[in-house]
Length: 250
Image (cartoon, helix red, strand yellow):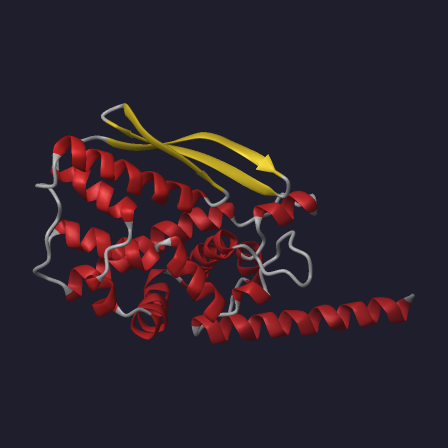
């Protein structure tokens, strides 16, 4: 029994050492509080199955805000003559779900994220994106804003983001709808009509409201994709209703 406990302890220490090495190679900083990063990589689905109260939702909330602020700060500096609409849309393209999913895979988050997926299955796209935001939140709590900003700017934006290419594309419909409503002085709201379990996945039903008037409703197993599609289709209706004069020009 003593030997089994010793082997288990040695295995845990080896695992913690490897995890710390991954955190340092990813962020550039050795972790001070390893538990923050373990929490960032524990999805809600995993915590519900393992009966653990700890998951990455709170860190995801924090990381989303910190990441958005850092990207906004950086874009504000390098595009001093661009308007609010340009900066808003470019920031949205950098931090959207698809972009975060791709970054999470590049950094190896899929190898460390705890989900309910079977051993040979990959975590879902939205789980990876959520974990990436949670990791940003953990890094911020562990090392502060300045070091987190250095990580985001040097290891994400300058290394993995082609800003020139993003400027030439315009696929973020949530951002487009937001800018359109701002220009037309319209009140925009996304309402979650339902959030139900379908098998092992959660199905989100999102509807767009503009000036409290209901527009398109869309459902998807990814909340972000449901919002994007609802925004795209609602924008089409608004363009017919109000015209295209308020489209943001770069």
